Image 1: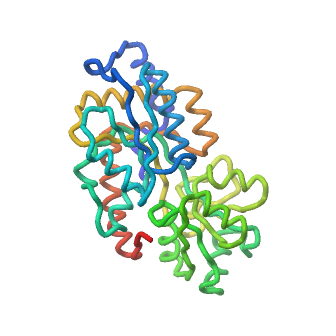
Image 2: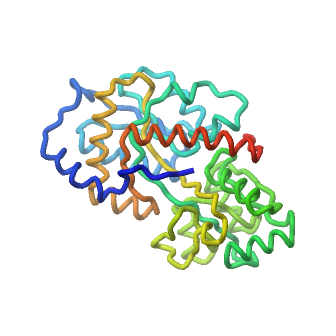
Image 3: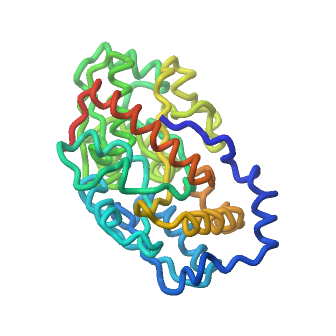
Length: 327
Protein backbone atom coordinates (compact mmCIF):
# COMPACT_ATOMS: atom_id res chain seq x y z
CA UNK A 1 0.00 0.00 0.00
CA UNK A 2 1.05 3.63 -0.10
CA UNK A 3 4.05 4.65 1.95
CA UNK A 4 5.02 8.32 1.74
CA UNK A 5 8.51 9.12 0.45
CA UNK A 6 10.90 10.65 2.94
CA UNK A 7 10.50 14.02 1.22
CA UNK A 8 7.00 14.24 -0.14
CA UNK A 9 5.00 17.23 0.96
CA UNK A 10 5.38 20.36 -1.14
CA UNK A 11 6.32 22.43 1.89
CA UNK A 12 9.47 20.38 2.23
CA UNK A 13 10.39 21.09 -1.38
CA UNK A 14 10.19 24.89 -1.26
CA UNK A 15 13.87 25.58 -0.41
CA UNK A 16 15.08 23.11 -3.05
CA UNK A 17 12.59 24.31 -5.65
CA UNK A 18 13.45 27.96 -4.94
CA UNK A 19 17.15 27.23 -5.44
CA UNK A 20 16.36 25.61 -8.78
CA UNK A 21 14.31 28.59 -9.85
CA UNK A 22 17.36 30.81 -9.43
CA UNK A 23 19.33 28.76 -11.96
CA UNK A 24 18.52 28.92 -15.68
CA UNK A 25 17.95 25.41 -16.98
CA UNK A 26 17.66 24.91 -20.74
CA UNK A 27 17.39 21.16 -20.35
CA UNK A 28 19.73 18.40 -21.54
CA UNK A 29 20.90 19.34 -25.03
CA UNK A 30 17.97 20.93 -26.81
CA UNK A 31 15.34 18.81 -25.04
CA UNK A 32 12.51 19.35 -25.54
CA UNK A 33 12.67 20.90 -29.00
CA UNK A 34 9.29 19.61 -30.16
CA UNK A 35 5.96 18.58 -28.53
CA UNK A 36 6.07 15.71 -26.03
CA UNK A 37 3.32 13.07 -26.04
CA UNK A 38 2.05 12.11 -22.60
CA UNK A 39 0.04 8.90 -22.69
CA UNK A 40 -2.67 8.71 -20.02
CA UNK A 41 -4.01 5.13 -19.86
CA UNK A 42 -7.54 6.14 -18.81
CA UNK A 43 -10.45 7.91 -20.47
CA UNK A 44 -10.65 11.70 -20.47
CA UNK A 45 -12.43 13.18 -17.47
CA UNK A 46 -11.38 10.67 -14.83
CA UNK A 47 -9.35 11.46 -11.72
CA UNK A 48 -5.98 10.56 -13.22
CA UNK A 49 -6.75 12.49 -16.40
CA UNK A 50 -7.70 15.57 -14.36
CA UNK A 51 -4.41 15.52 -12.45
CA UNK A 52 -2.44 14.88 -15.65
CA UNK A 53 -3.97 17.91 -17.34
CA UNK A 54 -3.28 20.15 -14.34
CA UNK A 55 0.40 19.20 -14.34
CA UNK A 56 1.00 19.04 -18.08
CA UNK A 57 -0.74 22.30 -18.94
CA UNK A 58 1.45 24.14 -16.45
CA UNK A 59 4.56 22.21 -17.50
CA UNK A 60 3.95 23.28 -21.09
CA UNK A 61 3.86 26.92 -19.97
CA UNK A 62 6.92 26.49 -17.76
CA UNK A 63 9.12 24.74 -20.34
CA UNK A 64 7.82 26.53 -23.42
CA UNK A 65 7.01 23.35 -25.35
CA UNK A 66 3.74 21.44 -25.51
CA UNK A 67 3.19 18.33 -23.38
CA UNK A 68 0.18 16.84 -25.17
CA UNK A 69 -2.20 14.43 -23.42
CA UNK A 70 -2.99 11.26 -25.39
CA UNK A 71 -5.74 9.23 -23.67
CA UNK A 72 -5.34 5.52 -24.39
CA UNK A 73 -7.87 3.78 -22.16
CA UNK A 74 -8.69 0.10 -22.03
CA UNK A 75 -7.79 -3.16 -20.27
CA UNK A 76 -6.94 -1.49 -16.98
CA UNK A 77 -4.26 0.66 -18.60
CA UNK A 78 -2.56 -2.14 -20.52
CA UNK A 79 -3.14 -0.48 -23.90
CA UNK A 80 -1.60 2.85 -22.95
CA UNK A 81 1.22 1.22 -21.01
CA UNK A 82 2.18 -0.89 -24.03
CA UNK A 83 2.35 2.20 -26.25
CA UNK A 84 4.94 3.75 -23.92
CA UNK A 85 6.84 0.53 -23.29
CA UNK A 86 7.38 0.17 -27.06
CA UNK A 87 8.28 3.83 -27.68
CA UNK A 88 11.72 5.27 -28.29
CA UNK A 89 13.39 6.19 -24.97
CA UNK A 90 14.08 9.75 -26.05
CA UNK A 91 11.81 11.70 -23.71
CA UNK A 92 9.17 12.42 -26.34
CA UNK A 93 6.71 9.74 -25.22
CA UNK A 94 5.91 9.60 -21.52
CA UNK A 95 3.39 7.75 -19.34
CA UNK A 96 1.25 9.56 -16.80
CA UNK A 97 0.03 6.60 -14.82
CA UNK A 98 -1.71 5.69 -11.57
CA UNK A 99 -1.83 3.02 -8.87
CA UNK A 100 -3.35 0.40 -11.20
CA UNK A 101 0.14 0.20 -12.73
CA UNK A 102 1.08 -2.05 -9.80
CA UNK A 103 -2.21 -4.01 -9.79
CA UNK A 104 -2.82 -4.89 -13.44
CA UNK A 105 0.20 -7.21 -13.83
CA UNK A 106 -1.31 -9.64 -11.33
CA UNK A 107 -4.95 -9.79 -12.45
CA UNK A 108 -4.44 -10.42 -16.17
CA UNK A 109 -3.09 -13.76 -17.36
CA UNK A 110 -0.83 -12.06 -19.91
CA UNK A 111 0.49 -8.51 -20.27
CA UNK A 112 2.34 -7.21 -23.36
CA UNK A 113 5.29 -5.67 -21.49
CA UNK A 114 7.52 -6.27 -18.49
CA UNK A 115 6.33 -4.00 -15.70
CA UNK A 116 9.68 -4.34 -13.93
CA UNK A 117 11.96 -3.67 -16.90
CA UNK A 118 10.14 -1.55 -19.50
CA UNK A 119 9.62 1.69 -17.51
CA UNK A 120 11.62 4.15 -15.43
CA UNK A 121 10.12 6.37 -12.75
CA UNK A 122 10.20 10.19 -12.99
CA UNK A 123 8.08 11.44 -10.08
CA UNK A 124 4.91 10.73 -8.17
CA UNK A 125 2.95 13.99 -8.29
CA UNK A 126 -0.01 13.27 -6.03
CA UNK A 127 -1.86 10.84 -3.79
CA UNK A 128 -5.38 10.65 -2.38
CA UNK A 129 -7.18 8.60 0.22
CA UNK A 130 -10.04 6.36 -0.80
CA UNK A 131 -13.44 7.24 0.60
CA UNK A 132 -15.84 4.45 1.56
CA UNK A 133 -19.03 5.90 0.12
CA UNK A 134 -22.49 4.49 0.75
CA UNK A 135 -25.99 5.04 -0.54
CA UNK A 136 -28.01 7.09 1.98
CA UNK A 137 -30.31 4.10 2.46
CA UNK A 138 -27.57 1.90 3.92
CA UNK A 139 -28.35 1.28 7.60
CA UNK A 140 -24.97 2.32 8.93
CA UNK A 141 -23.34 5.62 9.81
CA UNK A 142 -19.87 4.29 10.63
CA UNK A 143 -17.58 1.54 9.41
CA UNK A 144 -18.17 -0.47 12.58
CA UNK A 145 -21.93 -0.30 12.04
CA UNK A 146 -21.45 -1.31 8.40
CA UNK A 147 -19.39 -4.37 9.35
CA UNK A 148 -22.03 -5.39 11.88
CA UNK A 149 -24.80 -5.02 9.31
CA UNK A 150 -22.85 -6.91 6.63
CA UNK A 151 -22.17 -9.82 8.99
CA UNK A 152 -25.81 -9.96 10.01
CA UNK A 153 -26.99 -9.79 6.39
CA UNK A 154 -24.44 -11.77 4.34
CA UNK A 155 -24.61 -11.31 0.58
CA UNK A 156 -27.09 -8.42 0.63
CA UNK A 157 -24.63 -5.58 0.00
CA UNK A 158 -23.23 -4.84 -3.46
CA UNK A 159 -19.99 -2.89 -3.91
CA UNK A 160 -19.38 -0.90 -7.11
CA UNK A 161 -15.90 -0.99 -8.61
CA UNK A 162 -14.69 1.65 -11.07
CA UNK A 163 -12.95 -1.30 -12.74
CA UNK A 164 -11.59 -4.66 -11.70
CA UNK A 165 -8.06 -3.21 -11.73
CA UNK A 166 -8.66 -0.09 -9.65
CA UNK A 167 -7.33 0.74 -6.20
CA UNK A 168 -10.95 0.70 -5.12
CA UNK A 169 -11.28 -2.91 -6.26
CA UNK A 170 -8.20 -3.90 -4.27
CA UNK A 171 -9.53 -2.03 -1.23
CA UNK A 172 -12.93 -3.73 -1.52
CA UNK A 173 -11.33 -7.17 -1.71
CA UNK A 174 -9.16 -6.41 1.31
CA UNK A 175 -12.14 -5.01 3.22
CA UNK A 176 -14.09 -8.22 2.69
CA UNK A 177 -11.14 -10.37 3.73
CA UNK A 178 -10.18 -8.37 6.82
CA UNK A 179 -13.75 -7.98 8.10
CA UNK A 180 -14.82 -11.52 7.12
CA UNK A 181 -17.95 -10.19 5.43
CA UNK A 182 -19.76 -11.43 2.34
CA UNK A 183 -20.46 -8.72 -0.23
CA UNK A 184 -20.82 -8.85 -4.01
CA UNK A 185 -18.31 -6.81 -6.03
CA UNK A 186 -19.62 -5.41 -9.31
CA UNK A 187 -17.13 -3.87 -11.79
CA UNK A 188 -18.12 -0.97 -14.04
CA UNK A 189 -16.40 0.80 -16.92
CA UNK A 190 -15.14 3.76 -14.95
CA UNK A 191 -15.78 5.69 -11.77
CA UNK A 192 -18.59 7.73 -13.33
CA UNK A 193 -20.70 4.69 -14.17
CA UNK A 194 -20.02 3.16 -10.76
CA UNK A 195 -21.07 6.35 -8.97
CA UNK A 196 -24.24 6.58 -11.07
CA UNK A 197 -25.16 3.07 -9.94
CA UNK A 198 -24.47 3.99 -6.31
CA UNK A 199 -26.63 7.10 -6.48
CA UNK A 200 -29.44 5.09 -8.06
CA UNK A 201 -29.28 2.50 -5.29
CA UNK A 202 -28.34 -0.30 -7.68
CA UNK A 203 -25.29 -0.86 -5.46
CA UNK A 204 -24.82 0.16 -1.85
CA UNK A 205 -21.10 0.83 -1.41
CA UNK A 206 -18.04 2.05 -3.29
CA UNK A 207 -14.39 2.80 -2.51
CA UNK A 208 -13.63 5.88 -4.62
CA UNK A 209 -11.37 8.91 -4.83
CA UNK A 210 -12.48 12.26 -3.40
CA UNK A 211 -13.05 13.91 -6.77
CA UNK A 212 -15.58 11.20 -7.63
CA UNK A 213 -17.42 11.29 -4.29
CA UNK A 214 -17.37 14.86 -2.97
CA UNK A 215 -19.76 16.48 -5.50
CA UNK A 216 -22.48 14.00 -4.54
CA UNK A 217 -21.71 14.12 -0.83
CA UNK A 218 -22.47 17.83 -0.74
CA UNK A 219 -25.89 17.22 -2.27
CA UNK A 220 -26.69 14.37 0.14
CA UNK A 221 -26.87 11.75 -2.60
CA UNK A 222 -24.16 9.66 -0.92
CA UNK A 223 -22.61 9.48 2.53
CA UNK A 224 -19.05 8.66 3.55
CA UNK A 225 -18.48 6.08 6.27
CA UNK A 226 -14.67 6.01 6.39
CA UNK A 227 -11.40 6.94 4.71
CA UNK A 228 -8.18 5.05 4.04
CA UNK A 229 -4.88 6.41 5.24
CA UNK A 230 -3.34 7.08 8.62
CA UNK A 231 -5.00 10.44 9.25
CA UNK A 232 -8.44 11.98 8.80
CA UNK A 233 -8.84 14.32 5.87
CA UNK A 234 -9.33 18.04 6.41
CA UNK A 235 -12.47 18.25 4.27
CA UNK A 236 -14.19 15.42 6.22
CA UNK A 237 -12.94 15.95 9.78
CA UNK A 238 -15.77 13.96 11.37
CA UNK A 239 -15.21 10.84 9.28
CA UNK A 240 -12.98 8.27 10.96
CA UNK A 241 -10.19 6.41 9.20
CA UNK A 242 -10.51 2.69 8.66
CA UNK A 243 -7.62 2.28 11.07
CA UNK A 244 -9.63 4.05 13.77
CA UNK A 245 -12.48 1.65 13.02
CA UNK A 246 -10.18 -1.28 13.75
CA UNK A 247 -9.25 -2.15 10.16
CA UNK A 248 -5.50 -1.62 10.43
CA UNK A 249 -4.18 -3.31 7.30
CA UNK A 250 -6.08 -1.39 4.64
CA UNK A 251 -4.07 1.69 3.70
CA UNK A 252 -4.65 1.63 -0.06
CA UNK A 253 -4.08 5.11 -1.47
CA UNK A 254 -4.39 5.90 -5.20
CA UNK A 255 -1.47 7.86 -6.62
CA UNK A 256 -0.60 9.50 -9.93
CA UNK A 257 2.85 9.88 -11.37
CA UNK A 258 5.02 10.25 -14.45
CA UNK A 259 7.10 7.45 -15.98
CA UNK A 260 9.14 7.05 -19.16
CA UNK A 261 10.31 4.14 -21.29
CA UNK A 262 13.27 2.25 -19.87
CA UNK A 263 16.68 3.51 -21.05
CA UNK A 264 15.47 7.11 -21.30
CA UNK A 265 18.63 9.17 -20.61
CA UNK A 266 19.05 10.00 -16.91
CA UNK A 267 19.59 13.66 -17.79
CA UNK A 268 16.09 13.83 -19.31
CA UNK A 269 14.54 12.03 -16.33
CA UNK A 270 16.23 14.47 -13.94
CA UNK A 271 15.20 17.47 -16.03
CA UNK A 272 11.53 16.39 -16.11
CA UNK A 273 11.55 15.74 -12.38
CA UNK A 274 13.00 19.15 -11.54
CA UNK A 275 10.66 21.02 -13.88
CA UNK A 276 7.63 19.26 -12.39
CA UNK A 277 8.79 20.29 -8.91
CA UNK A 278 8.61 23.87 -10.15
CA UNK A 279 5.07 23.26 -11.41
CA UNK A 280 3.94 21.67 -8.15
CA UNK A 281 4.89 24.71 -6.08
CA UNK A 282 2.71 27.09 -8.12
CA UNK A 283 -0.57 28.40 -6.65
CA UNK A 284 -2.26 27.07 -9.80
CA UNK A 285 -1.25 23.47 -9.00
CA UNK A 286 -1.88 23.81 -5.26
CA UNK A 287 -5.40 25.15 -5.73
CA UNK A 288 -6.39 22.56 -8.31
CA UNK A 289 -4.89 19.63 -6.43
CA UNK A 290 -6.76 20.72 -3.32
CA UNK A 291 -10.01 20.96 -5.27
CA UNK A 292 -9.44 17.38 -6.45
CA UNK A 293 -8.80 16.15 -2.89
CA UNK A 294 -5.22 15.29 -3.84
CA UNK A 295 -2.08 15.80 -1.75
CA UNK A 296 0.96 17.05 -3.65
CA UNK A 297 3.96 14.70 -3.40
CA UNK A 298 6.84 15.43 -5.81
CA UNK A 299 8.98 12.41 -4.95
CA UNK A 300 12.35 11.87 -6.60
CA UNK A 301 12.78 9.28 -9.36
CA UNK A 302 14.56 7.01 -6.85
CA UNK A 303 11.81 7.35 -4.24
CA UNK A 304 9.06 6.77 -6.79
CA UNK A 305 10.84 3.76 -8.26
CA UNK A 306 11.29 2.24 -4.81
CA UNK A 307 7.61 2.75 -4.00
CA UNK A 308 6.57 1.05 -7.25
CA UNK A 309 8.84 -1.91 -6.44
CA UNK A 310 7.31 -2.20 -2.95
CA UNK A 311 3.77 -2.04 -4.29
CA UNK A 312 4.47 -4.65 -6.96
CA UNK A 313 5.75 -7.03 -4.29
CA UNK A 314 2.91 -6.30 -1.87
CA UNK A 315 0.15 -6.39 -4.46
CA UNK A 316 1.41 -9.68 -5.87
CA UNK A 317 0.94 -11.30 -2.46
CA UNK A 318 -2.39 -9.62 -1.67
CA UNK A 319 -3.99 -10.26 -5.07
CA UNK A 320 -3.08 -13.93 -4.91
CA UNK A 321 -4.56 -14.13 -1.41
CA UNK A 322 -7.90 -12.53 -2.35
CA UNK A 323 -8.10 -14.07 -5.83
CA UNK A 324 -8.62 -10.87 -7.83
CA UNK A 325 -9.12 -11.37 -11.57
CA UNK A 326 -9.77 -9.01 -14.47
CA UNK A 327 -13.36 -9.09 -15.68
